[in-house]
Amino acid sequence: MSSLPLIIILMIGLVSGNSLVTGASAALLFMKSAGFTGAVIFLEERALQLGLLFLTIAVLAPLAVERITTEQIIDTFSTWPGIVAIIGGAAAAYISGQGISLLSEHPQVIAGIILGTIVGVTLLRGIPVGPLAAAGITALLLRVFGYR
Image (cartoon, rainbow, N blue to C red; front, side, top):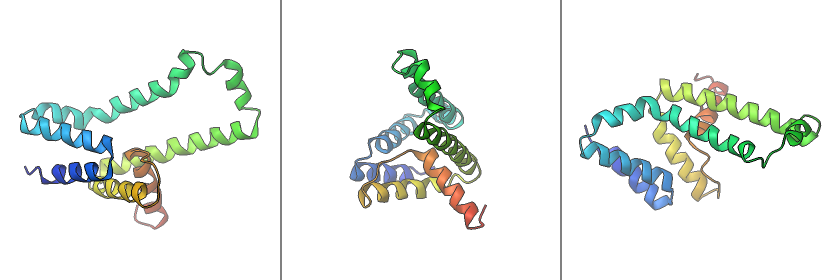
């Protein structure tokens, strides 16, 4: 099994300054070279769920430390920005869910998502929003163009 794709992704991460891509590829290269195949397989099967768990914890943490109050939550349903935020959040969750399906069915799109993210960050002055959102948008575009 060649490490060349991970090395290329590591280099792209370094050149683009994407510390998440750099760190992830470096960690996987280390685990692979150290013979931790079982750990890599575990991560392949469970890291997405674990990552989503921690992401959800991060989103809910302001509730736990009471930076967001019950009144603010109730007010969300009665203001135009709050209602639009609910719709936007639901749409983002749905689209990201489509990304999970796409990544499961076609894992080869990861390379394109990484390259597209790098182009977006370097040429369009965007921010890396994460592979699930990018995969979800990819899935949506593929559906619009009749490929999925």
